[in-house]
Image 1 (spheres, one colour):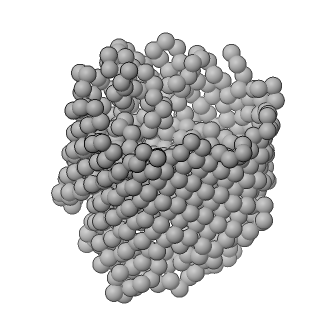
Image 2 (cartoon, rainbow, N blue to C red; image 1 turned 90 degrees about the horizontal axis):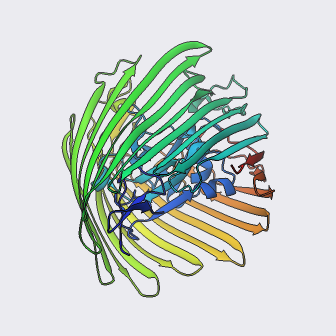
Image 3 (cartoon, rainbow, N blue to C red; image 1 turned 180 degrees about the vertical axis):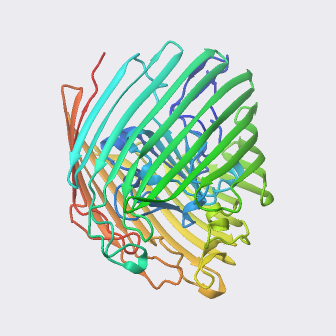
Length: 609
């Protein structure tokens, strides 16, 4: 029986809704971020991190989950809960579009997501989509998209599924969490809560010129309480509704020039409606809001407040023209606003967009064409497009090629932050070329991708004017290799990235763009032995520079992690991990320490009711 996949274009978990030809809604294990539709495609380079991966590898943060993934660079300023930036394919950290259950997340002032405050305990899966996606998502998607899905129970076969977990380790780190999920008739739900605290270590390495104090040899702690909620109902064979929310709050301590403590709140909530209007026509309506709020202190004295809101709405129409031919028409709206103690000259702006996408297959050839027009309240109209082609051989190997454009409007901080912003900035625009070859075989899969990206008017800090400024151009070349296999009972994954990100501006021509490691390698291996399992992760990162002038070099490093678990009585699981077992002393941001050897144990209980 043929399936026509239907689901919210980007507001769903990794277990979205699907529909049979006779319009009976069922569940399908496909994801949709790469194409904003349920049309399966191998034309986009992507990585999916599941809840099973998170638990098996005993990941305690999103930073741990993403570090070493092909195309990804992570920069952390001093440990758990400290400022964390994610660079994708050598582009800027605010060139990555972040979605949480489909809602556009992140700060309207800085432009980036608060990765350090997104609780891994509330996450069901993470999709990493590499390459420009502005033709589908508009601004912020020059380097790609990272879509975080919170816990979901849409595929549950039981009405009540409780889970409880407790863990602790060195650096005064402990975590408690619990929740319940299930499905009853046409409804499904999930509710989960978590709390963690970490006494931390001294974040500052004693480099005053890099922005941290030398007179604070203290432990910089972190406290976080979080929760997620999801509820959905299938009213008829053609209508399904779902609502979701993610909350994360707490406080973090750090060594800074102007503040040394911050209270934060992250809140993302929204809903979606899926309507199968006719056999060939599906309508997806989605909307939500993302709030990023922080209050900063220096020695217990309030210094500043930055509260931002991002409201978004989307309407998509998907038309199945014929088998293997899908046409999508969409409209997006976004409004950003700021409430801050800082005096921003402009505190809100909105964006309207329309786009069209065609996905088709002729014999062994696959095509994907997309065009989008955005109208930004401040910067007017911007057009982006993408074209991809692939040829699938009968032996599971596919060759592909693609071209895509992107754009990014300056953030409110870059434009208007007092005594720092530059209101004369232009939007950044990009062109990207990519070729690849991949294979899907019985017990293993692999891919090799090469890409070239040009970014015009790239925004970077200009010391000559002590403010952000547009570089004339930047060029990024990269190579990514990935392989996954099951061999003699071992689960093996390997990722390698080589990156050459250079400034083409006359003042810094040939210099490496800051904070990108030019080579990364990650190797994961796990083995199950009945009720027990063991695993290990090796992570290697090459040198990087902390400034555009390349005067501050950060050496490369190697970390090695070990983990093990044992399952008692099928419902109780004991886990233990030792991360950075070599006790490597390393930095990813100049002047800020990273954790040494870290030990953590946890006990998880999943009673059957």
